[in-house]
Every structure is written in C-alpha cells, then in structure tokens.
Image 1 (tube, helix red, strand yellow):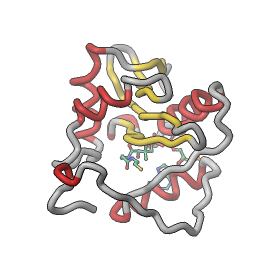
Image 2 (image 1 turned 90 degrees about the vertical axis):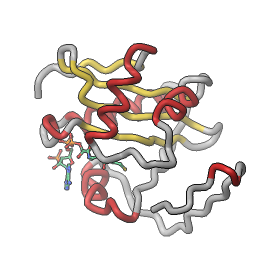
Image 3 (image 1 turned 30 degrees about the horizontal axis):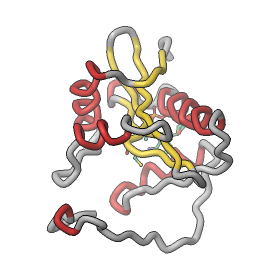
Length: 148
Ligand SMILES: CC(C)(COP(=O)(O)OP(=O)(O)OC[C@H]1O[C@@H](n2cnc3c(N)ncnc32)[C@H](O)[C@@H]1OP(=O)(O)O)[C@@H](O)C(=O)NCCC(=O)NCCS
C-alpha cells in the first residue's frame, strides 16, 4: 500500500469527500453530504477522518460516540485503491480515535443491501450481534419517501 496519511478533514476537503462517497455508492437522495459532514464536525464527540495518498483523498470514516458506544459511518475507500489495506487502516484509525476518548465498544450498521461488506468487517474482528435495529425520525419532515 502506498503511504496513507490520515487526518481529520478540513473545510477545504468537503467537496472531495462528497465525491469520494459518491464514487463509493454511499450517498442517498435523503442524506445531504454537506449537512452530514458539517454536523459530524460540530461537536467534540465526532469527526470525519480522511486518508490521503499524496494529494488525493482516497478514504474516509465518520467516527463518533454518544457518551456510551462508538460508531462509524461513511467508511469508504476509492474503488481505485480498494483491496490494498486502506480500509483496514482507516478503520484502525477510527478505533484509535475512539479508544483515545475512553470508548470501549464500537457498534456499526450495514445496510441490508450491502451484505458483501460484512466480510470486510469480519476480517477486522467485528461480530454480528442479534439485535433489532430500531429508529425514529425525530424530525418527521426529513423522513424520505423511500429508504433502504
Ligand atoms: C468496504 C471497503 C471500505 C473496504 O475497503 P478496502 O480498502 O477494499 O479493504 P482492505 O483492503 O483494507 O481489506 C481489509 C480486509 O477486508 C477484506 N475485504 C475487503 N473487502 C471485502 C469484501 N468485499 N469481501 C470480503 N472481504 C473483503 C480483505 O480481504 C482484507 O482482509 P485481510 O486483511 O484479512 O486480507 C471498500 O470496499 C468500500 O469503500 N466499499 C464501498 C463503500 C462501503 O460499502 N462502505 C461500507 C459501508 S457500511
């Protein structure tokens, strides 16, 4: 793997980040990438880590905790760099970010339509837990007509 530099994304990185998520198939019509990035960067308990090879943003992981568990979203590696250890490295950085804040467990969700990524997480020692994943739109106006 070429040298990967990981750091928190800055204001000037948001367009590249949204493009990366698009290339990785992670964007959905009801999720505004700019709003999601801004919200994750608002508080001290969350951020977005980026991974650069040279000047190119090739990986990301939105990471945060809620005062109990940690989680990650938008874990992504540019298709041109997948399969060379970049995903493992950005996930390890996200785990370190959480450990550094005293968090001892990370929960993550995988969309039902993205089951192939489960093997990626398994190879990083993540386990599938039997849980019902429930949610509620606290702002019903933002509920999309269709979601997966
Ligand atoms: C999932 C993703 C981040 C993996 O990144 P990557 O850089 O290709 O992963 P790595 O090369 O670091 O692979 C790490 C390990 O996972 C395994 N792995 C990666 N993708 C895999 C897949 N689709 N199926 C099975 N194993 C996989 C690798 O074999 C490797 O195992 P090893 O270290 O024991 O050899 C990347 O494929 C991606 O961005 N996918 C599209 C976006 C996405 O679905 N994100 C997850 C949202 S929940």
